[in-house]
Length: 111
Ligand code: FES
Image (tube, rainbow, N blue to C red):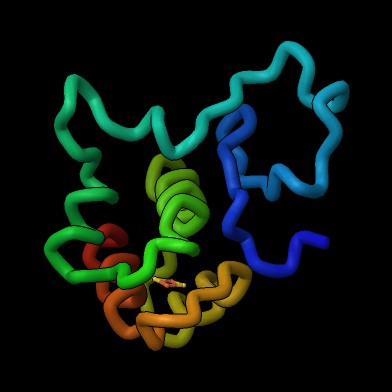
């Protein structure tokens, strides 16, 4: 149903919920999952920001949030205010963090 955002992947540069698309719709597309983020065993800048801000607890939402934020970060479209960051993150449900640490990640990466 696309409600939680936990399955978000990046398709041709766009963050999309993989539960809402059929495989045939993305045939021939570049599809990136969370496993694509590290390079040679080193965390990506987004992963590093999550680590430094303690932006996860149980991890259920983490892969989807990493991909949602990565897609916007790569495009340079991350929001620059707290309110805009909260709205940006509202498509990904996190039961644990209360979003404050996630907002800090977004605002840091937006600069
Ligand atoms: S860290 Fe548990 S749901 Fe987000």
